[in-house]
Length: 300
Ligand code: GDP
Ligand code: MG
Image 1 (cartoon, protein in one colour):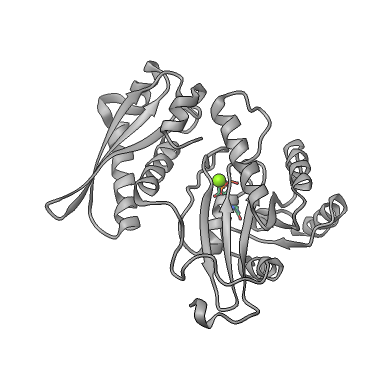
Image 2 (cartoon, protein in one colour):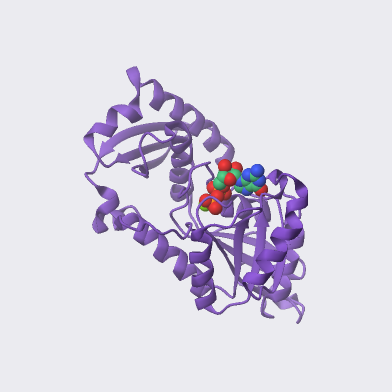
C-alpha cells in the first residue's frame, strides 16, 4: 500500500480514555468492527492496553483501548491499570475522552485532569445516548460538557448500537498527522492468539461470577496445541485465595463447566474452528497485590 499512499493520507494513535464502565471497550469494538476487547457490565474489566486498527482509503486510525482511570488504586493491579491508561494517553496523537451521556462523576473530573495534563487534542465521545431519558437531556448535557474543556469536537454516540461511530471515526481521522499507514492493511491488533483466548475466557468467567470473586481472576493459556484436527487449549484460572476455588468451580463443577461451554463457543467463533478447552482453577495467593505475579501474567 505504501508505494501508492496518497500524500494527504493520515495515520496515528487515538487513545480511548475514561472512567471505568463508560463503554470504551464496546466503542473500540464498534469502531473497528471486530470484537477485540472484552466487555462486561462490571467496571475494570479491561486490564491491558488493547490495540484496534481501522484502515480506510484516506486514513488509518490505531485506537488504543485502556483500563478505566479510577481512584481507589490500592492494589498493585489497580495501580498497574492506571499506569497502563496513562502511558497510552501519553503515547497517542490524540485523546478520545469517553463519557456517559447524562452523567458526570467525580472520577470523570479526575480523568479530565489527566487528559488535560497530556496536552493532546481531545475529542469527547458522549456514549450510551441510546439509553438517555428523556432525550431532551442530551443538548444541555453537551453544553455543560463543552464548558468543561476546549474539546476539538464533541460527538454523541451509542457504541452498543454502533450509532454515529462512523462520524466519530471521521472526526478523529481528520485530526491525525499526515503519514502513511503505520500498520499493514489487514492488521487488526498486535495481540496474539494466546492473549485473545485468555481474554475471551476471562470475559465469560467475569459474566458468570458476577460480584462473587471481586477482581480476583486472571487467566493464562498454558498449552495451545494442534491435536487430531482440533485446537487444544489448556488454560489456568488464577484465583487469589484458596477459598475462591470452590466458588469458581461451583457445586459438582457445574459453574466451571458452564463457563467452559460458553467460552468454547466464543472461541470457536473467534478462531473459526473447533476448540477443545480445559480449564484448571489454580491458586496464587494475592496475585493482584504481587508485582511479580502481575509481570508473569503480562499485567505490568
Ligand atoms: P469500559 O469499562 O469503559 O470498557 O466499558 P465496557 O465497554 O466494558 O461497557 C460497560 C457496560 O456498558 C457494558 O455492559 C456495555 O454493554 C455497556 N455499554 C457500552 N456502550 C454502551 C452504549 O452505547 N449503550 C448502552 N446502553 N450500554 C453500553
Ligand atoms: Mg473496557
